[in-house]
Length: 411
Image 1 (cartoon, rainbow, N blue to C red):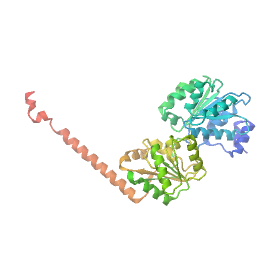
Image 2 (image 1 turned 90 degrees about the vertical axis):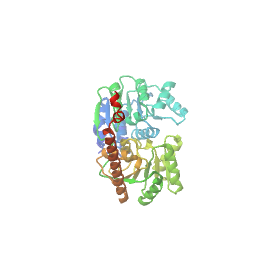
Image 3 (image 1 turned 180 degrees about the horizontal axis):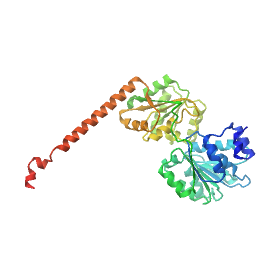
Image 4 (image 1 turned 90 degrees about the horizontal axis):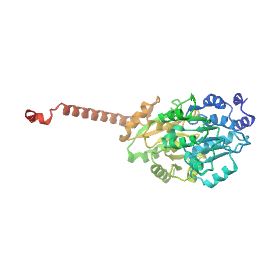
């Protein structure tokens, strides 16, 4: 028996769920589907890979009137890859419904999108910039939208899309249903919900904290100039079937992917400066196993469902601790085991200490020398701090110059 039947979904959706291989609702699906079917506004906090797309997708598809060839639902995603992924998932579970779903994003020919919109679609999944472009052109009408979904809302805010999101929400009828999904709940998201949502139901299934049971986390003390040989040595020793290596910048990720290729390793880059066809090709090669190393900026750390990643390497320490959790959350998913590594140099020990303070998991030294280097570095920092404190105390206890020279007598 398919346990999705308890949600009173129509027969076409149940067939799509069965053909997709879903039999048991995930925790977020159990808590979210019924309130959304009732038309309630909702804020859902759950990590990537928890089944969010089906959680909001099933109620969305259930409410579509196939006979009305107008846009009735809109889903906003921060990146092209996530928008495409959401569309594929909705098409999979809506396979037998006849519902037409269109993805619109920058980097794809707008003429293709214009043609599809003119033919009539029921659901639009898009990135904010291209959605606004169509609204201003008059090619995307949102007057018939019944509900709107904002996925990976915190990433949307981090990427500076807050004004774009508000513009789109203001273009939709006031009576719309709004669903907002996010791994974290920063202040900007709370303020957005207060302005646009009507007494939203809050569902917290799981934050983006990583699994401490199936993920082994290690740190490696290494100077900047030694990172590349250290990484090559690590990959050759560990021999992961698939791995994602995170860099801080687009230039660094491209350069690292090239250097790994020169070492006869199957690496591809993924970052925002690549064209859409290049990004699609990188993802295709990685997902099909033709390339087993993906060198990426943080565009790949959120939202994109990349299954069966054995290893994550933080080649550059992230500036924000939460990004670390987003990155290593790419591995050890759905009960699988995985490993993560973070390269630490003298210049970013402070960021690493902040990461350690925010997780219940233990980040262990990968080698004996890493533990020794970390202890020596901590000892040096303590001595330096103590020396600076003594110097400050000595200076503050000295009398002012004018006093020492007897100038106070003339005052």
